Length: 93
Image 1 (cartoon, rainbow, N blue to C red):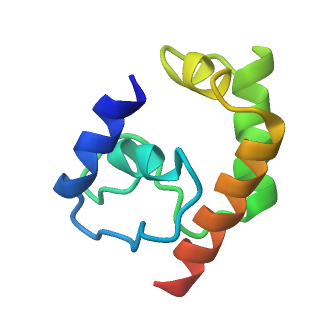
Image 2: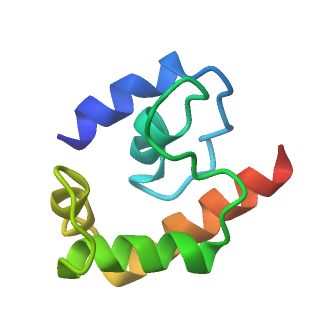
């Protein structure tokens, strides 16, 4: 499933440099990186906000159709690394 999200990455309207991203981070950008989407953008969110959102999906505290399954695929350490990278990328633009 992560491969499917990675393949969506090239379609981004405002691509980020994923060359130094932690494993799995580019998958987030397949849905949350494009400017023309109904899904919320991850730009300008802090690492704490991104990590908290992923934790809420992982535990079921936040309802989802797909994100709950995606969140369960990452360890808390992986989620933290992805959140920190995404937050840095959002602030760089």
